[in-house]
Figure 1: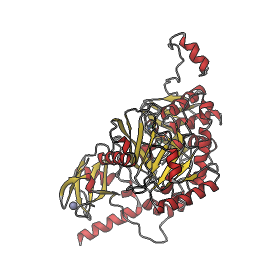
Figure 2: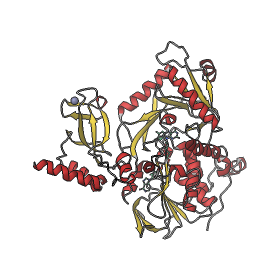
Figure 3: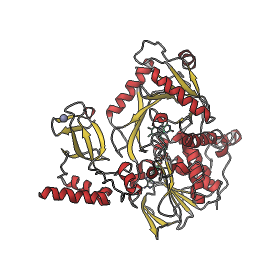
Figure 4: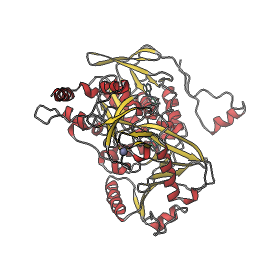
Length: 420
Length: 121
Ligand SMILES: Cc1cc2nc3c(=O)[nH]c(=O)nc-3n(C[C@H](O)[C@H](O)[C@H](O)COP(=O)(O)OP(=O)(O)OC[C@H]3O[C@@H](n4cnc5c(N)ncnc54)[C@H](O)[C@@H]3O)c2cc1C
Ligand SMILES: [Zn+2]
């Protein structure tokens, strides 16, 4: 029997303090797999968990398992630098990222879980005349799609980010920038946990330490999977495994246009608040924000060659730090606290694949590469719709895998910028 | 940092090199039999294995020559470097070459046949 979920609130905190916080209900169960499910999602990252949650909450498909080879949220979801924005260039991207941003704005409420979504703004800086012109063009396109976006001049930037140096004689002068005020950050783990808890409350089985080994299909229809916890039957299978998408696709002969690359990030020791927004620079090639704990969170571009080793190459780490210090010399004496890498699934046009496949009942959601955290709610929302109806909706349709045959690529290399 | 052996200059640090991605991709012959699917597989699809992989590298801050390399994409172990135009020789290299799904596509098979025939001449 499904136990009713406790509601998180100030009152429940007070109430539980009387028992020294020893009696909180578990946020989710740890079930063993059943024999049959109506749908199985592979990968308990944010996207997979969100897909399961919306399948259950919107489409009423509750007999679902999410199988995860490690622990939930241990992939890129728990490794990313959490930048959220929707200021992409093309209509197709604007539509999916803005759909996602709107869901973010009510997510903590909907999940009854504080995902610490903070709309502190995302500011991208231009360091040359050319970059600034290109930026204005982009801002105009973005505004035509009804998405907030504005150009700032150097003195406005200085007011917004006091620690920045706007001296025009620098090697990389700050000549302007564009700001999306509704952009910001969220707590990555909380997103995975919030969706997991909410999905679990509908009866979704989240099965950790359960790796997908084989996909079984008969007469071109999905019939089940073989996992490290045995065989499970299902007619619908949604694969949301980010950096491992090609590995899974290869098992059934699907040839994805994806390359797996490490993307690295690091945090410094915590310091007092000095930066209350997100700064990105494509020319200096880095992005930075400060976490609520005070750590400076920074990252740069992807590694130069394919890899599944979650550590990344040293020259990239060096470059990341050099760029941060170039832009903010104030950081030069900070010590590094932690450093890690995640394996991202990069696509030739820097846009995701949300798609049916040649096999009935098999769906892929991948290719988010370096920038999919911001899309977590929107991606899960439209992927659930695709799985439930076996038909893409107007938002997910352009992202079908057929776009590579038709030549209808959605080239977002420009908007993807440093990576995000 | 990888320590890469350029077939022309010897061992150098990774930062002197650039990676050109998957090696041994042959361009299908352009004719009206070529389907959009085959063309898109050539143009966009990638063999992206977790394990043994052959890729092209260029010694960009050195002799600027291209060459092939057999590498394990999990451990980063390098098994072999060899010149453009030749095929791998090590056990790992041969395995990486054979396992690639491209070796099973129509245009690749035709191409391999051609290569074999050329060798006989
Ligand atoms: C360092 C770094 C910084 C980033 N910064 C940002 C950012 O600032 N903003 C942004 O929008 N995006 C960012 N991203 C990208 C973002 O993290 C990803 O696009 C996003 O998290 C993908 O979510 P996911 O749920 O698809 O993947 P994941 O969280 O990786 O989930 C996939 C899951 O599938 C599981 N899995 C794989 N194979 C199997 C199998 N065979 N069987 C069972 N389970 C399997 C994995 O264990 C994993 O848990 C960043 C990524 C990295 C690595
Ligand atoms: Zn050389």
